[in-house]
Length: 261
Length: 322
Image (cartoon, rainbow over all chains, first blue to last red; front, side, top):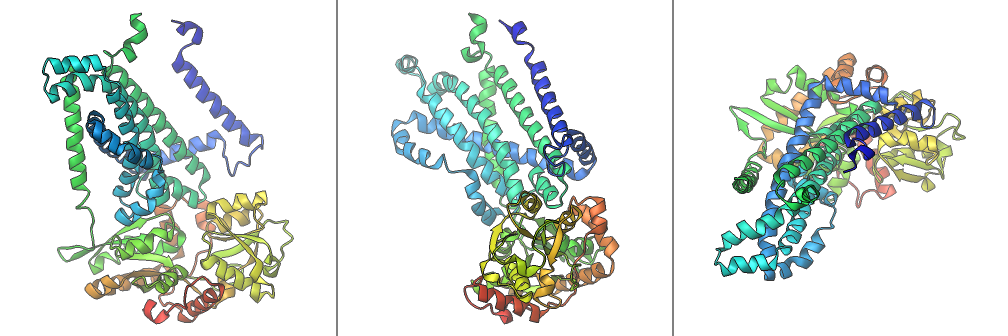
C-alpha cells in the first residue's frame, strides 16, 4: 500500500550495498584499518576479476553449489518424510520430542572429526555437515505444520472416510506446506554456511577451500574476493527461495493474505 | 495440477536421496589398480614444502611408474594421519614430530621417503622466530618468559624454538606458547598480542617485508640439516602392496632431487596449488629437498620432545623410519 513512501525495495537494497562498498573502499584508504588486512573494494574487485578468469574458481564454485544442492535435497526429503510421519503419530511424537531437542542444538561443526574419519576430504564430509544442520530446520518446521492442522477439517475428512493417504494429501499436506517452505528457506541458508565451513576447515573441494588456500598464501585481496562470492551466493539463494515460495504458495493466505483484504 | 506437481517434487526428492546415498559408497578408491595403473591419493598440506610432489606429477615421474596421483590437500595435518591409517589416502605428508607422536601411540604408520629439510643456513631458512622491528627482543635468549605463537601447541614449533633459546644461553622453560594459524600471526604481532611468532614461508617473507626482524633460525639451531617432514604410509599398505610403496618412494625421490636442482620450476609450480602472489613466489626462501631422512636430526627432535613431554614415551625410530 505504501510502496511509494517506502521506496522501491530493490533499489534501496542496491543502494545499501553500494554504500557498504564505498565504506569498505574508504576505511583502508583513510588508514583506519591497515590495507594489508582489509584491502579497499577496488583491489578486492580486481582480485575477483583475476579469479573469475581461472578454471579453478569455476570448478570450486560448482563444487560448492553441488554440495549445497545435494545436501539440501537430502535434508529436505528426510526432514519432510520424518516430520510427516512423526507429526501425525502422537506416540512417535512424544517418543522423539526430547531426542530432537537434544540433537538439534548440537552444532554441525562438532561433527567435523567424525566427517573426516568417515570421508576424509571428499564430498561426503561436506554432505554430512550440511545434511545434519539443514535436516533439523526442516523437521521442526514440518512438525509445527502438522500440529497446525485444523481439527475440524481433520474430523470432517475422517467422517467422510478419507483414506490415510487422502487425509495426508488433502488436509495435512496443504496445512503443512507453508511451514515446509519456511523450513526449506532456513535450511537453504544454513546449508550454504555449512558447505563453506566444511570446505574451509576440512579442505573438501569448493569455495571454502579456495578461501583457506588464499589465506595460507597471504593472498588477502583474493581471500576477500572469494568471501564476497560466498556472500553473493547467500543473497542469491535467499532471493531464489523466496521467489519459489511466492510462486508455489500463491494460493495460500500467508502469501495471498493482504492482497485479498 | 499444482498439487500433483508438489507430490511429484516430493517423489523426486526421495528418489534423489536414495540415489545420493547409493552413489556415495563406490567413490572410496583404495589404491585400486586398473589396467596395471595404481590410483594413489596423497594427503598433503598445500604449502611450499610439498612443491616437489606437484612438480613430479607434472613431470610424469609417477606416471612412468604406473601411479596415477591425486593430491588431497587438507587444511592442516590433523586429517592426514587418520586419513592414511583408514586407507582414505595411500600416502601422506607430515612433519616428523607429528609422526613420532603417532608412533608413540602405536598408530601403524611408517615413513617411506624424506619430505623437506632445513636449508641449514642461519637467517636464510624457511622457518624462523620473528619479532616486530622495534621489539626489545634482540636474540633468541630474550624470548624467555615471552609470548610466542606456534601453529600447533606441543609440536615441532615449540620444540625447535625452545632449542634456539637454550643454544643462545636463555631459559626456555617459561616461554608462553600461544596457538594460532600462521596467517593470523602478523596481525597478532603488530597488535602486540604476542611478543614473537614462529612462522614458516610464505608468512616469514611477508612479515620481514613489513619490517619484522628474524631473531632465530630455529630449524638450523636445532640440528644440522634437520629433516622437518616426511612422506609416510600405513603398515597395512606396506605389507599388502610393498611394490606400490617401492615405486612411490622412487618417484618421490626423483621428484625431490628434481625440485632441489630446479628452484625456478618450483616457484612456478607454486602457482598451480597455492595463491601466493608472483612477487612473493619469486622471493620466498625455498627449503632443501634431500632424498635421505637425516636420522640423527630426527633423533634430536625425539630426545628434545621427550624432554619437553610432547611424547608419552620415547619414540622408537627403528619402527618409524625406513
